[in-house]
Structures are given as C-alpha cells and as structure tokens.
Length: 178
Image 1 (tube, rainbow, N blue to C red):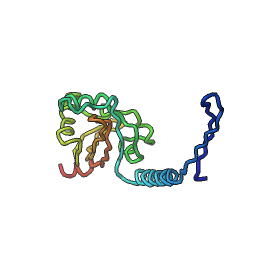
Image 2 (image 1 turned 180 degrees about the horizontal axis):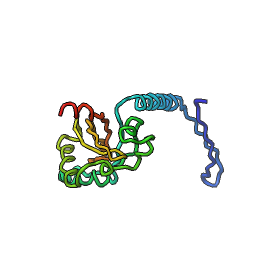
Image 3 (image 1 turned 30 degrees about the horizontal axis):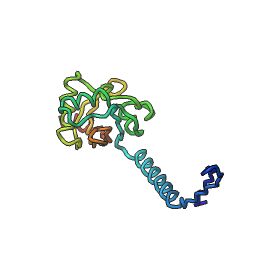
Image 4 (image 1 turned 90 degrees about the horizontal axis):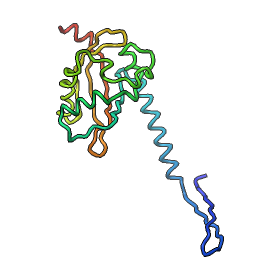
C-alpha cells in the first residue's frame, strides 16, 4: 500500500496507448504520519497549558513598508482570533474557545482606538516580538483584567499575516503590588 498506480489512456498519432505511472509514496505517508503526531502533541500542549494561547489572522495582511502607525491601525482593524485554547476562553469569562473565534482586540480593549493604536505601535517597533507586555482588558462580563502578553509575528512575502500570542492573567499579582 506504499505504491500509487495511475492508469491513463492517451492518443498519439491516432493510436490509443495506455500510460502507467507507478510512484512509491512511502516517504509521503511517513511524513504525513509524523505531521499528524506533531499536531496531536501541539494540541495536547495547548489544551494543558495554563497560559491563554491564540493565533490572530490578519486579513488582508499588513504591508511592512507602511508606517508603524498605519501597521498598528491595520492590525487593530483587520486582526481577528482564528485559534484559541480553553485557558484563553476562561480568562475572558467564556466557556468555549470557539466563543473567541472572530473576536478582535476591540472586543476586549479598554480605551479609545487612538490609545490602542499608540500601544500597538510597540509591536512593529520591536520587530513583531513582544515579551511581557502588560495590557488592561475587559472580559465578557465587563470585569477588568491585567494580562502579561507575549507574541510573535508570522510573515509571508514581506507582509504580516498573523501572530501567535500567549498571555497570563496577572490581575491578582498586579493588585497586590499596587
């Protein structure tokens, strides 16, 4: 079952011929199985970690030649969650990760859009990698939370197409230290 056989009929100079193609697909099958194993391990990790993890897709992608201001604005207007884990859903007072799909920063941000743009300009300035950026956000019940965020951008053809993010709820720690 590691061989693929394909039969085709072709006509050359009015003569009907049979073309047989035989391919060894064992390497492709092995790669596919390894990829599936890797996906399962990643899925288990994402579901078991206490950090909220998400992938935000940016569509259309952000042209990196734009000013930092325009990049931040484009991200806020065109970035939306396409993957999320259970821990992230719970941080926002939701029962299921699917409740986060399609949400954007605007759904959780406290403050106006100009403040959001100014805050998000840190991201292109840091080459699309943020470590422990503190944000103040609201959950689905309107309760305020302090999050420590880490994120890294994903690029294709000199455009930002998305970002992986992980965050921890540090609300209790933040209030104690105040």
